[in-house]
Amino acid sequence: MDRRNFLGLSAAAIAAGAGAWSYGSSLRAAEDVTGRQRLAMPPLLDTRQTGRLSLTALPGATSFLGGPPLHTAGYNSGFMGPTIVMQNGALDARLENRLSEPVTSHWHGLLVPGHHDGGPHTPTEPGKVWADVMHLNQRPTTAWYHSHTHGSTARQVYAGLAGVIHYTDGRDDQRGLPSTYGVDDLTLVIQDRRFDAAGRMAYSPDTTDILNGFHGERMLINGQFNAVAVVPRGMVRLRLLNGSNARVYTLHMSDRRPLHVIGSDGGFLTRPSETSYLRIAPGERYEVLVDFASGPPPILMSAAGLSAKILEFATDDSLAPRIVRLPTDLGAEPFTMPDENMPTRRLSLTVGGSSNFEVRNSDSGAVQSGHAAHGAHVVAPAKTQMIGAGPNGELGVAMNDFGINGRAYDARRIDFQVKLGTYERWLVTGGGAGVAHPFHVHGVHFRIVSTGGLTPAPEEGGWKDTALISGQLEIIVRFDHPAPKEAPYMFHCHILEHEDSGMMGQFMVA
Ligand SMILES: [Cu+2]
Image (tube, rainbow, N blue to C red; front, side, top):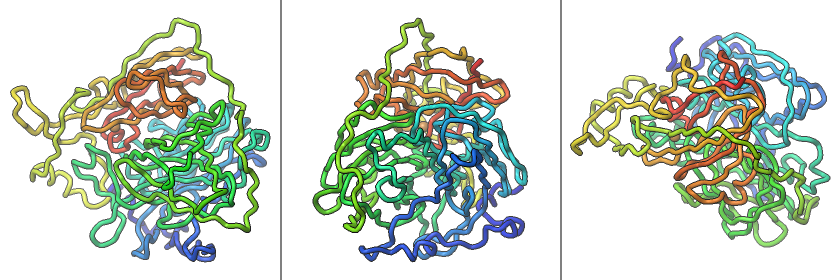
């Protein structure tokens, strides 16, 4: 198989039914009072009645911003995936792969055993089907799913292999929360994309992109550019997923109206927490309530890294506001620190064997030619050439791994084992490449005890599965599901170019 051609369409793939498809065309009927294209939600795939989930990874040809069709991929469509509604109980899940390379569906935020986790040890080969019954039991939350094929994750997610999960207990009415999908309960997949000189969306990471993570200049929300979210004049719930490969956003409303955070990666907070600025790193989710009752509708902006418009809103007076006040109690159980002697584990996300390694980006011919040979749709290589300060302060080119505790990911090496049903305290540091790394652990939720020596902000004080490392991150991790040697859990940087380059490890739970 020619890896370069993943985003390319084989004749067989076209015959499989994806065909040419324009993301914009299906939305034309949805123009509204603003005269602009209305933001569409991903299609809803509710598994609660059937107890079944069927996903098919498909190639697509998607046109953006009026440009030519581009090679994309998705679950059950040619680009991106449906919003899956799940609940506690048995779920008969199935993933069929109609792409020309292996894929997985990693359930990011679901508490399932290693063999259901969709990590790199359980790829579904082209033409094959993965199927099993998953037994789900966890707190309601907004989770997501994406491909996690080692070495290809960044490119596959960028191509569209990602979607959102609404994990529900059916009690949002009792909580006083908006819950009408696409009306007062909006799912927002936030991603940045880069366009080349010819106006085509491109994924062509060079050395700098691998060091910093691949950043784009245009915002894509639910796979759409320049769309406007239309909401009632009342309380609106925004389920925010940072599905970007690398970009961290600091979200705020253009008029600074408050964001009332009600939930994070692993479930609801005990009560809403008000903030004006909300930092969200790749892989993280937050649920917020925003009151649109008064004033001209604000614009969702990002203040960090990209001082830019993320999403415009418009209000529609014909939509009756259903929720007009902030709930006081979200029903989440407060967390009490376990009174037990926990093992402490130290993890350092490292570049070039050191978490403090000074990295310089290079335009040297040697570095560039290493990438130029691969063409436009190349995946990040396993090793990256970079320039670092040598022992005498001189600059020299060396091959250096991204790793954890100085070691790059090795699928054959189990980094450690954890006892099932216990807690551990993890002290996680990371630096290098001048980048803050979002740390994600599979199959668990954790609580942040401290970050950078401080107690976490209230919105970071709930259950999490991903957290940005600034200084030392101290977390309490709970292990409730087994992960055997043949299907261990991953822990890794969620800058996908770093993950693919080796900033990942794996552990067993038994
Ligand atoms: Cu990283």
